[in-house]
Length: 111
Image (cartoon, rainbow, N blue to C red; front, side, top):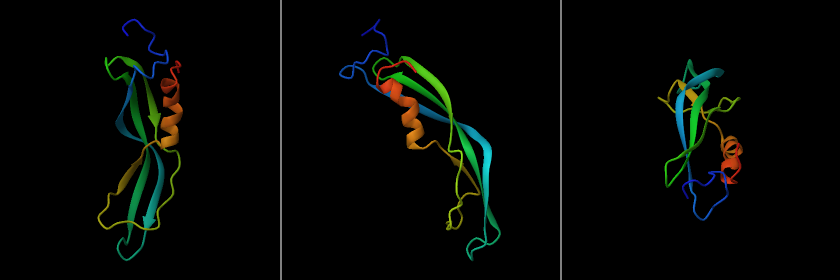
């Protein structure tokens, strides 16, 4: 396999691993304020998350690509919260966002 183009489709011989690392909060998305009996005066601040992604060939560990992603761009305030939950939340990318950026690697095409 050494010397082969890493983007040649070889599904019987190549497995990929995507490693995602949280890098911190991004822009403020929303502040949710609650006044229920369990959460009087409570607020939860929601941020867009920032992530670094690396795609590697599993057998060799060879880096095939790396890029940055941000989490969801919009959120809604949930009507119910658990007592004692965090006061800040960071929203990760959803499955569709990961699929969109990883599908070229899965199909063996350079992004």
